[in-house]
Image 1 (tube, rainbow, N blue to C red):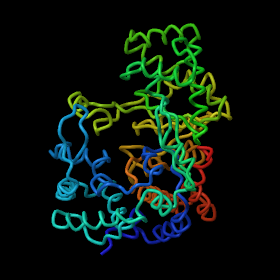
Image 2 (cartoon, rainbow, N blue to C red; image 1 turned 45 degrees about the vertical axis):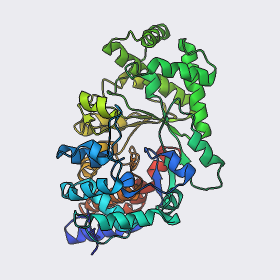
Image 3 (cartoon, rainbow, N blue to C red; image 1 turned 45 degrees about the horizontal axis):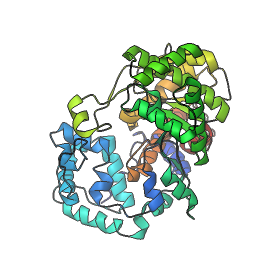
Image 4 (spheres, helix red, strand yellow; image 1 turned 30 degrees about the vertical axis):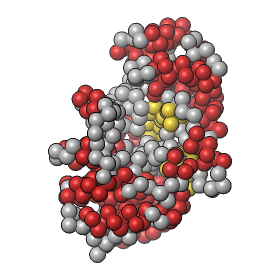
Length: 468
């Protein structure tokens, strides 16, 4: 019994469904371009077998463990490492049994689609996961993972990944990317420059990270000019390992364009740990504008990921550290927040800034009108909590009327869960084909244009936007 309906996410009405099927046939087997994500480059460098089913599918996936935690399952029981050194479950089979006994919690969710897609298409499974089938699943997947064809590089090729970008901190030495580059493997794995740790005065270790960047580059990062030159040097280093983008995960979309003397004074306060919350936010905002200017110099695409109220639970942050499912969306302003950057460089067609949001109310009110006029702006796909069939559909409905399709950048999966990559791209392709079919049948899109547009949304726009 197949776990998935072949017509999932297509329109219910016959004519629209037939057209969606035909469009999907055009894009189903296109190569995957994954220009932003969080898979571990160590996987591709070492090409070692994944340790066990739980470590592959459950423990690293915050979509999975946050749902289970919401129903009373402790993170420790799922093998999530504790930052405070406390004990966690290490028995993969025990973790898997716990996951399987709660699999019903994922009914109707995007995670259920992704997981069932992985089970069916990656591991060839035809029975539903449950407490009763947990051990069979575990043994079957563990047996698969022991085979050469389930190692990271083989799966990369099987998934038809054309290129994938990981995301590393600005001070990362990119050791694993060096190993990939120096190997005889032909898979294209590139990095992206993530400077949050050296532009956010409120991040733990900010001053130490800035000092390290100085040691790495030879510039005096205790001075404003030396600090900026160190960024330029690190960006150039990342480009040696294929980087075509930088990525910025700020709490807000605030930008500033401060005078050099004012920026230098603020930087000095940041190094001393003397910034107020307002001053720290202003510094982050100014650095987005500085990063945009650097992008004009070196060509890196600038991605802005604002709006997550990160680490909402102080207790869970203390116990488990960052990125453990307690990041919550918040209201985000773009029109006023981006104006300083856009006044400085926004009309430059040779600059590419990709905007993401966790605030869906901004799609039609702010983001689409901004991207619909400023040459530098493009809209990233629905992200994180909205990476779902419904979220993708809402995005298309609210953004297309003002920004069109070609001021968007296709799809990226933004995942840490390797086996979910083809599943997520499949969902996006099905949703877009379903949406295009409704445009054709309602007289808003010529039928002969729809296949080309479907291919652009699935493959071409991401390659162009990210300069891949």
